[in-house]
Length: 166
Image (cartoon, rainbow, N blue to C red; front, side, top):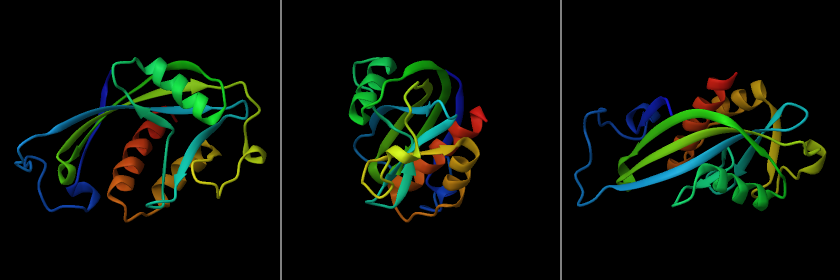
């Protein structure tokens, strides 16, 4: 999978460290996650609003021993929709020094034939999917500020995935 971007704390305004500087802890945690750009029949993409931190992200989950397809099935079951994989987008590496974490985030495309859309969502419900046209989802992630450490990384990463497919 093609490397699309490396995200560092400095570029997000979190730390003054340069990109060659790493925190020297006793260990560095490695984490693999999958994020899915899911298109519905209205050509809208799904975003989640995370109230704790007030940020938006693509649906997804941690990759453990399973493949991306199995992670996608878990996510789809969680939200009660069915989707099919439609290809890979790329890889974003996140250097989260505050947590001594190197996160590999794999982006994938998926499609659903469900009639999922704005009339089937509750935008104020935690964890509800919000469906937006691709350009509106990009604008939301670009314009929505968050003070959340996690949220800054999530929005930068997912914006990269969305811009890659526009």
